[in-house]
Image (cartoon, rainbow, N blue to C red):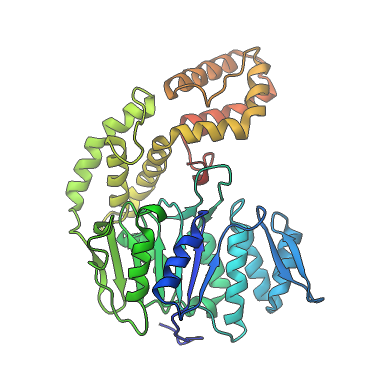
Length: 407
């Protein structure tokens, strides 16, 4: 624990990646009308933020460029070296997530200069346990990683030290290893509220959960009970941590040996979906969702050795992308349509629309493309450029090729 800049209050900062962030902030405000609730959400235009200049007027800063990040950071009033650290943190965020991180830096800058910031922090969005991303639809937001938030916390230590109560209103952030990873960002954290597995959405219970969290963390709080969401949808998935009581869950954790057995049994189902023999009918239920939940639970257990984690992380990432393969194929086609056209044309083939074919058909098309390309001497440049997009992206569903906000 550090005493740097501690100033307890009941104000709340809500950073949300989904379009309904304001609904969640309003629920917290209704629960405690006297406390101040600050909302950070997607900006008016991707990765652009407004900040006051020396002339007192609001200026737009384009965070897609290094120059735009530098001019924005210059408005925070921080020492040069610290400003450079903040700039690196903002630059580390992915497309359409820099605006949220920059807005957080604006709030936290007050603490760095001796001011007061909210002691309570809510992070909201879709999540696989290591990032937060925005909802599906035409205004889909970016993906903000815990690593980028950690970089900002290091760059702004006084602000990070003032966060005492943390709520992660997102799926898969309540496993023990994930809770430990979030706690590492905030040295004075007293409590944390998160979810093992699925979390309720705004329209299906999140606002009720947040109202209970607000009441439970009001004032000086030493501990949270894991049954605080009892009777609410997804209340059984609640996990809490407090400095006094440690990590607790609403339900008993399954043994690691049982989880390993379930993972091994579920791999056959994964293979069927991966080959395209079966298609996902319900992204929230069924054998593939159960397998994903098992992999997440294993990753959440500190007993699982580091030597196994890379394989489990790959399984997590691929399974999640399989669950939402229809979204993946649609976004893949939208993002790479021109490259697909050029690559197939270079081999004299008609380019497919991957958003309109099944996974098994897509795999057959990719295999045919790869075989034909191997026959060519010399190999057409456009086809060579396309191949890794097809194999590493649509076939292997690697996280480096298929970002979370496509899901």
